[in-house]
Image 1 (cartoon, rainbow, N blue to C red):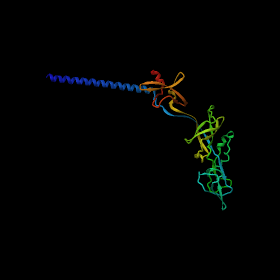
Image 2 (cartoon, one colour):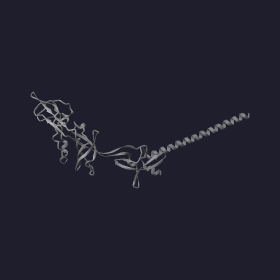
Image 3 (cartoon, helix red, strand yellow):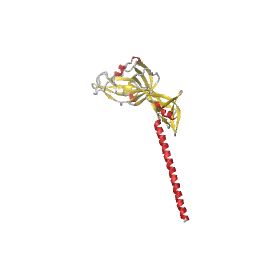
Image 4 (tube, rainbow, N blue to C red):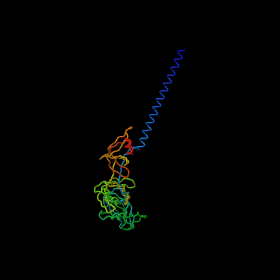
Length: 307
């Protein structure tokens, strides 16, 4: 009988212990959940984000004229041309490039200089052969290249082919409208050119002039750009200033005395990091002084309320 009573007491004690454990775990879970909700709500009020490493660029949109050192061979009479080399072949001086046919006569034509052979003669070769920036105006960019003839017959004086010097850097005469009166481009400055969002690489400003609300530049590449061989007038974008770093909203920056910084969350804590502002544009700033895994506070006013 006593043994039975002891078993009953033992079971009751176990039930009480189990109930206390369940209550303890439930209270802890509720506390942790409440804590997480509090942290989540706090961060939501702070409006946090992860910085993105990128580039902020200042651009101008305008026109570009491709300038080349090129020699055109013109037709002596009406006739036809039979080529002996392929389009874009590199030829030496005096290389046989083809035959000019007229009234049953066949005259051999030779390369007047070394370079790249092409039949794409646009009629602007002479007009653009000796451009001086001082005399250039917007009317130069209204020049229209000749369309290729729709017949094999070549008229007297018409360009048959040309040889382009591919041993000197490519040149582009550029024209951009500007609205910023303080915008300055310097000679020898490096800029990047883009055509249809594709980069042509970096060019050096060989010459520059400004006429009121427009600028004209002579841009020189590091090498000859064969991809421009068939091009003359281009719609271009010029990147004249760029800054690489972490992109953050400008409103996330905080000024403390002479320093600028940014609030970052670290666990449940908030820390202040001093940063260097490299550039600002619209509502974006480029900074250095933070790391890729930092969680930055976009709304610093909410931090000041907590501190």
